[in-house]
Image 1 (spheres, one colour):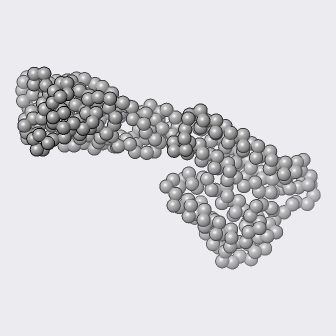
Image 2 (spheres, rainbow, N blue to C red):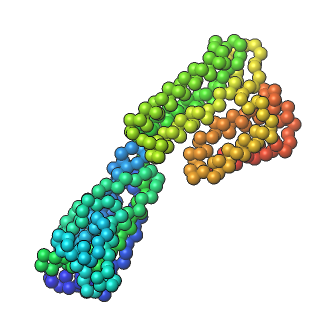
Amino acid sequence: MKRIGICVLLCLMVLGSWADEQRKVTLSGDHNKETINLAFCNIFVSLNQTDDASGDVTIELENLSESMALILFDRSYTEKQAKKLSPKMTFDKKFGGTKGKRIIDACSEQLSSVMNFRPSDKYALPAVRVENEATKVVTLPVYIAKYKGKKLILMEKQIIQLDIETELKPSAEYVQMNTQCEQLIREIERTGLCPNKSHRTSVDKQREAYQKRIDDLKAKIDGIISSHGWSDNDAGFRRYNELKSKLDGVEMTEKDCGRHKGPVAGHKCSYCGLSLQQIYHKLDDLYKKVYSSSNRKSAKTGVMSQVNALYNCCTDSRCAKHAAQWKKGGDYKNKIVERYNRINSL
C-alpha cells in the first residue's frame, strides 16, 4: 500500500503541481490560533501578544507525508551550491527551468539554516514580529523532495503565501492609562475654569492645577514608553504618544461653575479674539487634517477638544465677541455649523 501511495504521489507531481496557496490569516486576542490544512502539510499559526501594539506570530509546519521530505531554504542556492548541502540535493529531471541554471528560492523570513521536514516532522519557524492592525506577508517556498539513497531529489515547489492580519487586544496597562486621560479631559471640558470672583481659587490657580495633572499623566506615559524601550518609529510609541497629544489639545475654557451667588462672568477663552471667519478657517483646517489622515479615528480623537472649544466660543451666549453676531446669523455661521457637523460625522 505504501508503494502504491508513493506512485500516486509521484504521478500527481509529474502531471501537474499542487496549486500555489495564498491564505489570509486573521489573529486577535480572542482568536490567537489558526490551522491551515493542505494536501501535503498542516500549517499552525499562533499569536503571542507582547504588548498592546505588537506581538510575535509563530508558524509551525507539519509534514503529512510518510515518504517525502519538505524543505525550506534559508537563502537562495544555485544547483551547484545545492549539491554541496548536507544531505546533497539535486533537481528532478522533470523539474521546471533550465538544467544547471535553476535557482532555489528562500523563505521570506530569516532562517538560521535549511529546514528539512522529514516524514511526520513538525517544526516551528523563527517568530515573526507583527504590528497591530497591520498585514504581515510571509512567503514559504516549500520544496517537496524524495529520498534517493543519501541525497534528496527536489521534485516540486509549492509557494505558500500567508497574509497575516492582527487585531491585538489593548493591554491592561494601556486601558488604564487611556481611561485616566479620558477622565481628566472630560472633567476639564465639563468643568472648565470658573472666573467668578467668589470661587475659592483664581482662574490662574485652577489652570495651574489642571496643568499639573496633565503633566503628571504625560510623565507616566513617558515612563511606560521608556520601560518598553520604544523609539519614535515603534507602534507602541505612536499609540501612547497619541494620548499625550490628546492631553495637549485640551482647551481650558472659562465658564461659571454655577455654585456662586452674584453676577455670572461672561464667556472667555483663547479663541475669543478671533473673528467668525478665522474660526471657520481653523475648523476647515482641522477637517482637512482628519479627512486626509490614514487613521481618521485616531486623528479625530486628537482634535475634538479643539473643535469643540472653537464651536463653543461661537455658540456661547455669554461671549461678548461672538454672541450678537452669532444670533444675527450669516454666511460664516452657516459655514461653521456645516464644518463642525462634517468633522463629527467622520
